[in-house]
Length: 458
Image (cartoon, rainbow, N blue to C red; front, side):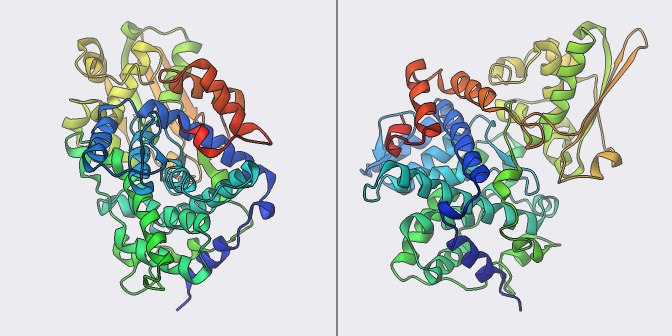
């Protein structure tokens, strides 16, 4: 049996800042800006407040910052709270091939744990954190690709939680300076912490929002256990009863280690301009573009046909009764009919559009009834390397407009520029902290001589 787990762990253990391409470290800084944008803004969500109240009830004092507040607690609880906040507004990054949210888990683990470590020179501290995060992205993304998103979803699992815990264990192990054998044990331990159900879709529950936080918390604990000599199975990924066999009907183990070091999965990770499911981003882009280009008005539209990727069909298109009748913000963020209608009527699909009031809007509901979702074989030809979208808008006067989006805005091939990313940061974080503080955080991350890590967190 090929030792995929050991090969992957040994490669990632050996990653050092000096051996990483400048482009990779730049992307890690870029995604840190994105992470803090969504975590700071997400800290104001009711779901995030509930997590903080739980932490306060336990009364676990420590030195790790709960982002968006001045609370300090132990690393695991800080990672839990920050991961929940970062995923709370559905605008955090997503790896294309693995359909997994990476930053909300990896940065939550890294920042919470790094604050507990001995002080070093800020530049070395930042570079060590970025390298640890890059390694965590690599592990979680490769494991997600190996179980295959469509197969994983079919069994009711959410990659961000189940695969993310392995990445968090790697990130934590690197920051703690574990040996290769200890890191292997941490990954083995993480396998018994891999959980995350998609059942939240049935009733718009908050549980998805906590998945990155749970993965980050458990990854930290797995690494801390390994540091104390606790052992884990050595073949947790490929073993007879390992992760691949238990969490996928059709795993592809070679994806765990194929072409290691030739590229890095952080370079194949997208960011979200819109505050909704990744499978809705491309169609929303297409709708917004056609509305602007053809100066369309909602009252002119007779029918909107949206092609939905098969892997996302059970997430944003079915069950039909639920998707055409969203009752909460979570429901709306996973309803393609709602996303299409709100993009047409409001010309945007951000946090201000995904609201309880809009889920009840008669105008939006009326337009939702004219949205038709279809499976389109043409979209599947390049997925998941690409996440294309096709939308057709038919008008009452018989005119027909069609748009095909190969790469949604935010994809690596159609990225937000640094300027657009910092604008996203200011738009989100600026609702919580001052404009001056926003500028300070951006400068600290992009500077060759960054501030200490705790200064980034509040």
